Length: 386
Image (cartoon, rainbow, N blue to C red; front, side, top):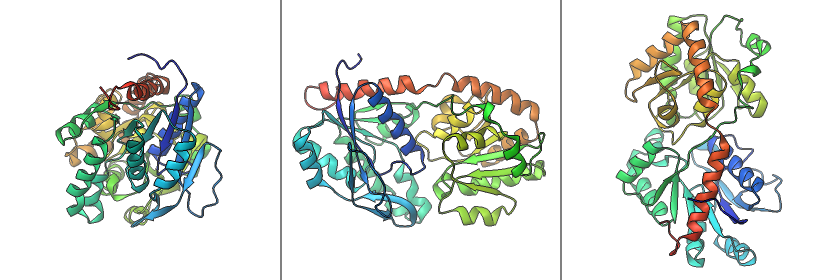
């Protein structure tokens, strides 16, 4: 592959965007800012945020949206074929990047194919794996079939991990390419550790703090988090338990762990300060396509306990820069978390190694690869990736 030699006109279609707090929105914002810094013109099409009063720039098109049933705070963009046709007639994009597969993304894909505009899609979320967590297990196969049809109509689909790419190939997805994720090691830095914040948590300088950051939802294996935190407190009763985030399972989490400190969602430097003020990061999710919080915790100097999936599977080395547990070994996960909570020397050693690993995971190379993938889609002779 070679670098793109000229400015591109790129249109991003997404059903999640700042100030929504999730890994997809943060990734997309970083990619868009990176492309713009490299001289490309990037437009964003997204749903209006709840209330419809959010501000937007001239390069953004806001379309109607609706809340996702059973999941407050998550919006779906409604189909916007007419608006997209009008917008693209006035300023035709060179390439379209569709980050989400909802009604808005589907209508964008249809219009792009009608107009012969190449489409790069991103596989950011394992929606089919979520169905069982919301008592809709019978929908898993239909959802997977829909996702397969959607992505197989794109020029190419970008997947964040080799493991995820292999799983999709086995399920019949075509024209897949890798696009990893980076981490901002200037923002997420152990030097942001705050004794004042730890004191708010009731933790002294030597008190271990077990931290979790993310959406508090069933698909994130909240039951596994509860089990791991209980194992930690049984081994180390003084350990503080802190969760940053919110979501539909917040009440369940608070009821199961009355001693838990729930901070709500945090962003920017405040989020970085929360990471750096912990001592170990507990991440029991099995449904991640990547898991940005894993690399953010590593950059913050935390020893991470996670299952051997996605970002953890790529960057963690068991016993070196964290604890890596096979995905079905719940007992092993709890044991690893409790052992780290009880061993300050191991936490410090693994946390330093995690920081060193994260310093080699920059965004600049990811943004350059994204630029190249977009250019390859444009240059493919029949509108599909070679």
